[in-house]
Image 1 (tube, protein in one colour):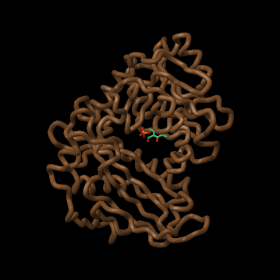
Image 2 (cartoon, protein in one colour):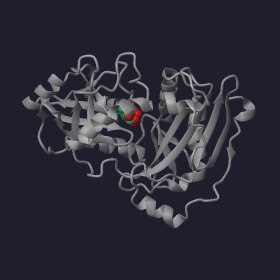
Image 3 (cartoon, helix red, strand yellow):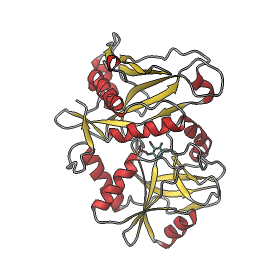
Image 4 (tube, helix red, strand yellow):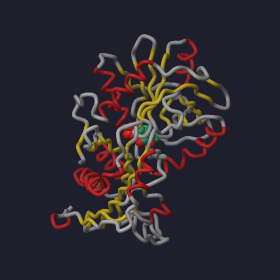
Length: 365
Ligand SMILES: Cc1ncc(COP(=O)(O)O)c(C=O)c1O
């Protein structure tokens, strides 16, 4: 961003939600339903670069019906949380990783790459005006922040847009799964794939999620809350869930997770969990994992725990895996020991009650 435009303009909302109403929302936040009083907007234009960084009141986006994003899906996003600590300070977790992942997604979707420092500053700017929306540190409440970038050029035609917007909105959240830390049931998608070789699986782009929704609703119909995708080519290898990465804990102690092979999102929680497991002297294998291996492992008792992880759900035990052909695992197993203790350690770091020995936290306010 050019020097003269790195100044942030802040326009305060004149319609801020009254404190009592905000507090009522923070008492029992429902994921993704209520939003804070402001949003961030930074614009990019071909030949001009990033400019006009601003914080403005939350509200609808004025957009031409011919805006490229509405037709060709040139859109990417991130998900990151702000955590309040006991002393009232507000922190976030490894934001540079989200910033770099947004850049990678931008590259894949032929969108402009937002500089890392503008990404991190955009979180600070939003928290500066909407810090009151970060809930007290009880019941895993946080402020979920959603940075995203869209092709905003008014143009019909299949080519990269010459105008883009980066925006940030935020929504207070409680636990992702309403049932608490209970093992979730997973639906194995046999009839739809999420990402193919050289496709967009590694990017965090809306199209991947659109492609997952049919299987997701099949999953709901079958009592499952998440979908497991297999590799698109052979439907043999386990990739990831619709919004989380997967881990398997073996009886002899070692842990296995699918390798990042170009079709899986590089989860920041996944990376952190691998580190926390290694810190305990436990070996983690990142490699190909077949559904056959998991079926055999669960049936023989070789696999003793399965868990999923992501920013929204943190670390969640996985119970049964189901498809239209089979059911793998017990109906309602107890959450695994390693799963629970990693979850406590990670949330402890995020809420400032466990030492942040890797320097993962960044102060926002
Ligand atoms: C498809 C997918 N996989 C994995 C993850 C987990 O990534 P992270 O830990 O960075 O939230 C997410 C959530 O962002 C996701 O949408």
